Image 1 (cartoon, one colour):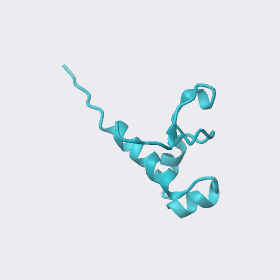
Image 2 (cartoon, rainbow, N blue to C red):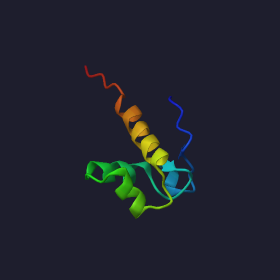
Image 3 (cartoon, rainbow, N blue to C red):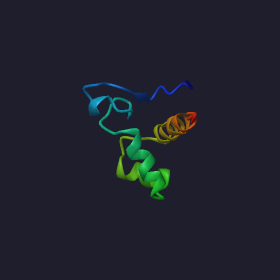
Image 4 (cartoon, rainbow, N blue to C red):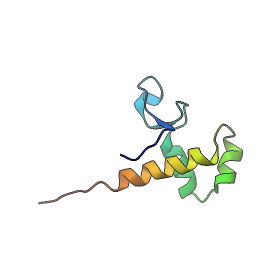
Length: 73
């Protein structure tokens, strides 16, 4: 797996979902916001605890997961 030092997993935080830097901010929320058309600047305005590297790593982690291969019979 690529190095995602800002993506954390803690069963006591959001039930172990992938989050940014241990905060109650799941990677999926950031990906959803980008999918909805928000820019990094707009996301940071809505979530000022984030920075551009947090967003970049969230998207990179989502891309990593999307590379999963599914083999059918």
